[in-house]
Image (cartoon, rainbow, N blue to C red; front, side, top):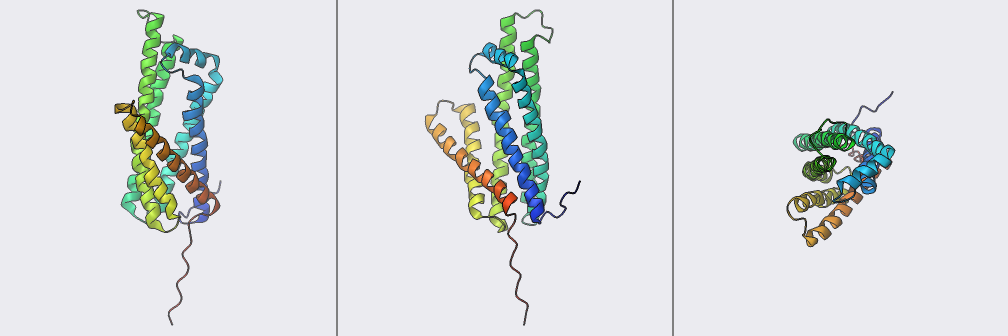
Length: 240
């Protein structure tokens, strides 16, 4: 298998962009679509009944999580190598922030597994009634979902740094860098709102607008990597 070795090449950028699009597809499926179909707000018993009925979809969501996290690790390293010539410190910090996000995502799966085991009755808790098991499983699901509030903080930091690198590089449109910086704040706003201010309607509107901006910026950046790659500086005229 031949992989591009030069981080400044267009072939390297295309591969990075393709992995970025894979993250968008797998993440949208496992983080947005599957929970939207299976979860019933405030009713753990109904949620786990849906999972039991549509176990194939539930497992497909787990596969999407794994695919996304593997691609995230690769993209973290590849973006670091691409932007290291711009600013090595910022590029390394951006890579670490994205890897921290993946670590939190991976840890969330432990609570996912615990909640499912409790709801299925595979964990021997004879002193608990069925209602108590579902309540405990619901708590595990809540802890799993709370992990989103944590990884979004690291992803916000990553997008701030990545957007700054895009702006400084001169290799990509500045509008994409501004979109990553401005829109990325939506992840931080979402975490603050969900954790501390769940009833703040104004924050809800601001969050949605910012997340729309960052989604367009991320997809635009990925598509630019795939279709165009970095701008190649014009050669300097030879000295007379």
